[in-house]
Image (cartoon, rainbow, N blue to C red):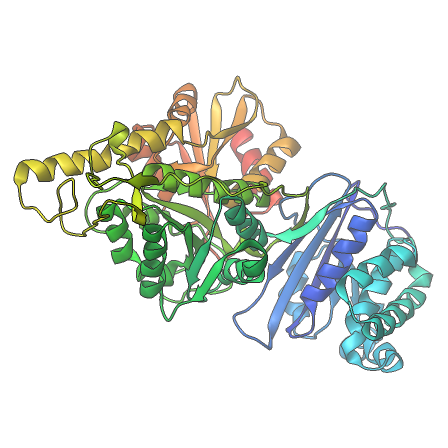
Length: 565
């Protein structure tokens, strides 16, 4: 076979099949194989809301340079199920190498035949089809088996199971020898210490770095991964894990933990967070720290439970009755997810306010290689005081921050109340005191906007006139598209803190003569927030809301249309 022309220094693979056929396992094995060969990887899942059946896909991108966004180019498409062909055919180009079992697609399909049923029977059962596929892919890219074998050893810990999968991979590799070296992607020097993690793991590790000691959550896709990963770290890091009966209980348990001196996190998605709104308002009234991980998926209602969207910014900004301070952080990559999760605990503790960590399904479920995260040697020191007999929970302080005591630490009484209260925490209906307490709580916004704020990141030329503004997981696609197109006088501002907006965001907006906001929702929620908070004029909005994330190619096309209308 002739070598297929591909994008230099990378390869894109697409796998399609039913839920339960092991697409995630294939991605795990091949991602580790490519990492063993010194490449960077990105694995993006696209799956239906069902345990078995349906038609799912996973895209694996391996490259010489770090990759954090999905490319639409497909070099190899492996179909494990006949129903995958009509769903994925539109994503494949004439040059795409299609691979399938002749028993499923027939001898005249034009596909490279990979007789999985036949080879699976030789390996001991169709359960070994995944390793057969991995062996065939390794051969197609011209790689030797040891790199794949090392990856299999990471995935299968049982010696007996490993031996069977190694034999299955060899069957696939032997079958692909006629097409060996079909693609030009030689191994590089292996990078020591690289991790293979998804966004959920990054959030969980960030929470540990922030000193998290308690999580209460009710499982809900796509937030459940954070609960699972913290549960795995419960004994080693001293985290109390509670699967609550519902989200109302979860947030109230979290508030109880902070009241007792813990550092609590709740993890939920849109429909679950709806139930937390009253607890959020309670946090505002009693001036309690709270960290809320809100994992976005398309709504309303149940929506698309396993797809992605950025549709919950406004509920994070405006939910909860009454007026009280809050902060909203939105990481765009696993590295930022780790950093933002850790910083959320610092912000919450210092400001005695709720802090949102706003992610989405794409970020949480996408797998990629990362530099090692470094957890601190000691947990962060909480901002808790030892109380005296004269202690007053809501005594006036700088920036509206009162000394926070906890029951049992000192001689004072730690009294909190959801009714309006005086400095001691006793209920009051004094009108002047009411005004003073509202002003005191809102004064904490300065701390969140200035001293504790996370600055936006500017990509591209500093001498820009056209400014693209985005947030969350859209960032990597925009950054790579900007590098690819290189439009003149154009930069991208990635906002990590969405509320309260740091002054630096306003400064960047004022320099631009044309502002474009990109986000994955229908109505432009961040664009609306920018207008309200800064008074800026937004020239254009790029919105996507079909349940899939922006790709590099999509953003590059939008940029080219903007530059050459």
